[in-house]
Image (cartoon, helix red, strand yellow):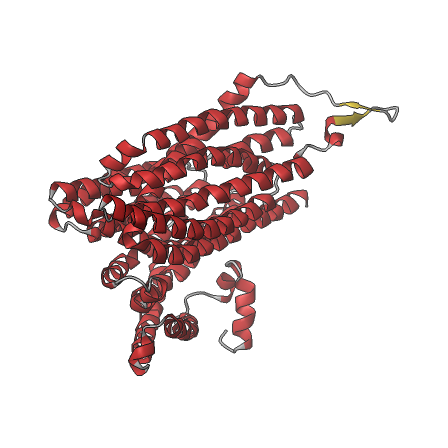
Length: 563
């Protein structure tokens, strides 16, 4: 019973972070829309490049801190080594101070050379304004890891939402102020790029402001609730008196530092491999196009790529956050050595993610024009619409690759997803360079990323089959959602085209009319897709109930006499 309670609590706490992740992604998408309206596609090019460098330095410094610290602290709390928990925090704060300072300095003082190498000299302004955020995030990572290690994910969830809201507000306000300042600088220096560069820098100031407010929130939480309860440090003697608990010999600072580094390294390496592709893409894309005499279009095209990634990330994040909720039960099945249950959990998790990601890709393909015009109304979206349609299959492949990584980790094979990602990254780089000389535009980056995700999926699928004799059910997992999504996509494409042609010319391109068209299409798409899934027998009653929110869905479908 006690283990069941712990398992349910683990799943609940994990679900809190998953739901928070979805909310933060949505906020992140929503504030980027007015931000791009302010700074333009070129400004978004500088913003996207600066963020890709920031993300890598963040990964190398503190991205893995919450996970690593939570693991180290949870082990010591389980063994009632409370004094060692305090020492873990001291070592972690020392590490955060040193590594945060180093990475902050690298980004601030190296902003000029980094921007020059990326063929975007004006990107240096955004890099400098982002630099202090790395240091703030290091301390924030320590405090988040501490609360997660105690089994409390709520402070992390609240802080992430606060961080995103502050980020959104400050980013837009500062982008407006600095874009205007940059426009004046253009006139003084007879340039065109200062407005875009300063606007992008203003947008990155919001990231630092959000992180700082989140850090202050955690400091307050630490003062109010973060200290270990005094009773945990006390023990009761046979005569009823209390005295300070004796613990085993305390771990030395050096020993704790070693454990922390050994815990950090695998997470750091895997995170770097998974996330470095965007930086490599930016570098290779910029250098190759510059060598072909097309340096003038690099910033604009990279801005298009940034807009595509905003739309791309939402369905991928939603599919993986929901699908990953199946992983804890998979881990339990592995611990119980129930091979049949392990295979069942794998099948259901992959099937569920495909049921989400395939229609999302089809929907974005069909509604690319109204969605892009709705979100980025101040831009000419001709190229972005084509890019979104070319890149929509990658949504499915990235969703599948991420959930298959999680499955392999749940099975206990932690190194294999990393090895597969590294192999895929090497192939991805070769394909990208080759494609850029054939088609020197942003489509080469989109197609190379699709190849990367495809190779990861194939290698992970081979590993799953090797270890658990599992094969993906092609019909239920891919064919049925694909057929249902194709019919749904054709229907909403026809409806959107009809509505846009039916509306008067003076309102058909306005945001309110586009909101109306997209909402009507979604209301039509959902029932079409689910009815087709049921008619094509995509899942049985038992399989549906096993899926996240499956019981509620079954009750709704049963009331509608669909199941």
